[in-house]
Image 1 (cartoon, rainbow, N blue to C red):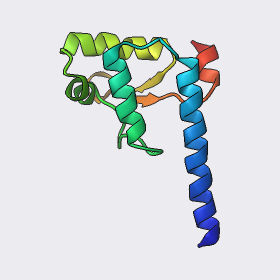
Image 2 (cartoon, one colour; image 1 turned 45 degrees about the vertical axis):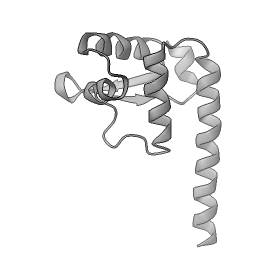
Image 3 (cartoon, helix red, strand yellow; image 1 turned 90 degrees about the horizontal axis):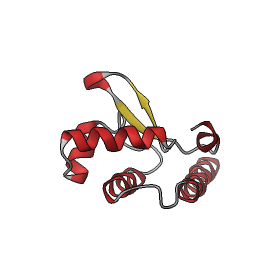
Amino acid sequence: MILEAQRVTLSRVEFAVAKARFYGRHRDQFNERQEKAIARMFREGIDGFKGGLSAENYIAITQASRATATRDLQDLVAKGAFTRTGELRHTRYWLRLEEKAARAG
């Protein structure tokens, strides 16, 4: 039980460090809607949104139009803040927390 508690604590600390690095890499790159969605994703914790963030989730969080949501999400991928999986209705977005993401974009 103690070892499991240590693993959970370590994963939470690593998540907090990754979050700080993410914001450090992307300082002043996001608009207000993007900031709101990213903050909401971080509040979900280590596991994030089950199944990833969909465009519908983004619209619900930010109250953006579908066209604006699409542009914002594409921009987040281009900046290396999100990774994208799937196509069309099955497209999902995930926070890109590893440092190499900033160099790849």
